[in-house]
Length: 193
Length: 91
Image (cartoon, rainbow over all chains, first blue to last red; front, top):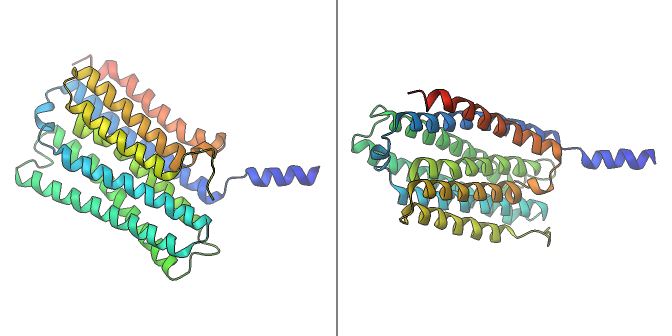
């Protein structure tokens, strides 16, 4: 009975790496949540931001949303492939995630260059300050995720993911999906409303 | 290993893309501003819930992980709402 209880407790225990990742994500929720709250409150308080917000490209942002959502799918598939111990599928899906993340950053850079060329700099007004602050911080997180996924992809390609490193695909996946969730709220807030 | 109780990752992706289209439609269709904003953010919440539940596997996590994720969200919402009277109505 005592053995069965101990075994049940072991099954219920969350791996420390996963717990650490969720704690990290909780701190990230506070970071992005604070910024998003400041954006919403300032927009409600000041008013008149619609004119500035009308200059951002919804089509480009929608395309970028599709890229990021698709990269979440490839990340999940990499995790599923880890469970199935299919090294080739893990490598290919992680590579696809890296390429989609890099494409997101490329499109974002293209979008920034167009806006800067039209004089919409970070100091062109409060909307633009928030716009560059929010999307820039998010892009930095995407960049971090691309680097982490590239490292995992290289480890998988060299067959160094098993037996000890395979949990990292799940942990990096949690981070990557969180970055996707942040964009899911940033997109309507900055581009649609 | 797949679990037949839950939709596949591809099914979730299709739903996410459809909801992306629905969010764009809400922004472009001639709704009133309040209705459009409400609809757009409802769609965003549903999309986030799909990612959290199925891609981040919250559906199979215990209470501790839910608490770690929910407490900062509630804090952010609470702090934002508590500032509304001061910042928005006191200009």
